[in-house]
Amino acid sequence: MLIVARKENLDAIFKIFEKWDLEYSIIGKVNLFGNYNVLENNQLLYSKKMDSFANINQNWELKKPENEYYHEVYKVRNPELWTQYNSTVGNRTIKGPDKEGSYSILDIPEVNKKLVLTWGETFNECYVEMTINQNSKPLGIINCLNFGHPQTSMYNFKQTVDELNKNGVKFNVPVLGGNVSLYNATNNVDIKPTPIYLMVGLRD
Image (cartoon, rainbow, N blue to C red; front, side, top):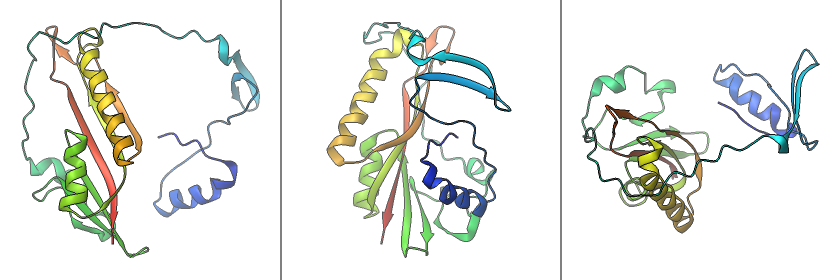
């Protein structure tokens, strides 16, 4: 996990890490000199102008794929997946992921509120669960976007990102982070596009 923070916020961030017994280290500094520098024990090992890096430019065709997907995604509840990790750390869990429903609720007594997490395969699925079913205010959303080979999945990928952007702006829910996994295929047959979202919110 990488955090880019202002110098005046470091102590507050470090206190949070120390509270939860998390290891951390400062690995670099951002400046306005326009150079990418790599140092070891204050000795410069590598330096290059930021604008001299060549961008990889591959224009994948935005064509709707015609081939069948390698498999379908099924919603299977497997309690063992949730019991591999203790989801009740800190004794704050009111409703965990091991119980029915695509949401969890954590108690945050420090601010007299409840932290609510909702998840699903679409933005709307998370938003409806958060606002309608859980009567909570969404604060942000993260994503895990899984697709096949870029040569055949860019159409679906663009649709997914555009839809996420449109909903985020429409409902004022910022995208806080996420990851993208491409090249998921077996015997040259892509997996079905499987974006997964998790929304975080608060409830009084």
